[in-house]
Image (cartoon, rainbow, N blue to C red):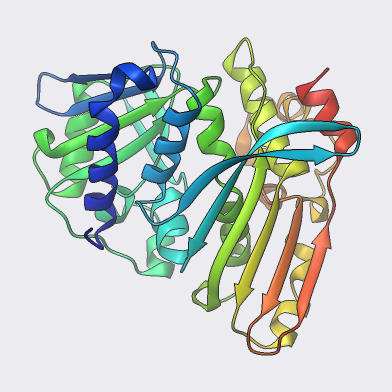
Length: 316
């Protein structure tokens, strides 16, 4: 398989499209030739569709699986993700950093098309560029994108619209919940980047996160999916650095280090009038983090689960 993120993601999407009926997704072609794959807007989607969508987000460079997670006297279905060399798949592809707004459509874009378009300031830091003759973009939205969206993505990626694939799932869909839960390592990587750590020193990552229970609307789903990451996820990283570098930031990585920690995300969202950008950006982090330094053999741990808030969010 190619090392290109977009080619790898495209191959995964091709295989998924061939099983669309079994996976509860739909595949269609827009009038400009772009491929549209609905993972959970007007279709049910499901766990396996979500697994595939998660691996597309990672540009085919991560393995996603399901497992039960225990939080004291209750358990939740969870997702694990294993990644080697996580800078490229997590920050170059999976991170939802591309704002897509055309007409009435708005979504945050993730997936390997980001590394072709390179519209984000992030790419000035990580200096990743993917070269391919096709692009795959994942959109988290309760609406299906239009031809105008596909035209815009094609223009930014330097390709024709018929070489663009758009994969979309709503936050409250099963596939949408799974792909968000599969972002545990990505949230840790982005937090390290924000803290000034040289993320190229991260050798591998493994993370687990509960999958949000079904919600009746997108706003509730946004709250539950974020609560899963903030209060129930755990990430294990292996790095090659000095112990001093790790000691200086380990306690700053978990979500509990944020000034906004300790409240259900839905309530926090309302408190800030529905404006994500008013929320402390350091909140968006795993609940627990372990870092093993391959250079010294020492392991550092920080953070904690918050079973009380998880229960209130998901099982209340």
